[in-house]
Image 1 (cartoon, rainbow, N blue to C red):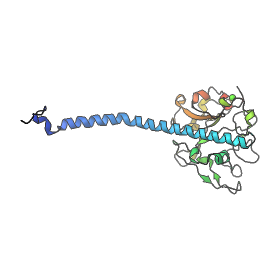
Image 2 (image 1 turned 120 degrees about the vertical axis):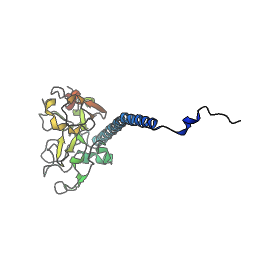
Image 3 (image 1 turned 30 degrees about the vertical axis):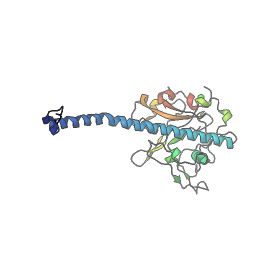
Amino acid sequence: MVKESMFPKKYRQGFTLIELLVVIAIIAILAAILFPVFSRAREQARKASCSSNLRQIGLGMMQYTQDYDEAMPLFSLATGSYRGFSGYGTAGDDGVRWADSIYPYIKSTQVFDCPSGDKHMQKYNRGTIAPGGPYFDITTYSYGYVTPSSDTNPVGVAGRSLAALEDTSGTIAVVEDGRQDDGTGAETQGRLIPSPGEDISTLGGRLNGMRHTGCATTDYQSYAFNALYADGHVKWKRLTDVWNGGAMQQWTIAAD
Ligand SMILES: [Ca+2]
């Protein structure tokens, strides 16, 4: 005797249109819920990769200091500049910059590219300015080296001796920064590094260095970035932790 199925025959003829529509609607709702989660997960992965880049840049800098009498790299080899700080891109100034100086220890251009950025490190022919070129084009780095602009501006580790750094674990050396395409083909300077006494509200367009938290907003509370400290550790910092009413502590070499 043939065993009867537990389901009556009429239910084995397939799904009704209503049932199919319900299933499709549920899949659509799940997709709508999950896609933003996937997108956030991807951005978290990019953020971690960016943090790893900064760690490798830190290792490169440490190796550099061992070969150069315990001195941190200059911002550039521009003549007549203060510790290599010379502004950006002016003819006759700075063909060889900090990334060129530590590249021999890193030997990867990808390390200088934040995966959330839209640029890739490129060679730039500055041979007529600095014989021996081409060197890397600073407008294609994803990271900014904290550099003092004068003796009276105590910000920055560039060109300092390790002995001068009073608080290595509390001094930011390199940040997610550098120049970015502003969408029109022109470049804007995403500079997070404050000048003495500067308030967070003056940052404005300079926030476009903050790739992992978006830009073009004045919601300063939500901004954060990866920072490499002078002792080699990398930390995810909220902007409000390091831009606090014009306080400069984490940007200066003094133990303040
Ligand atoms: Ca300090």
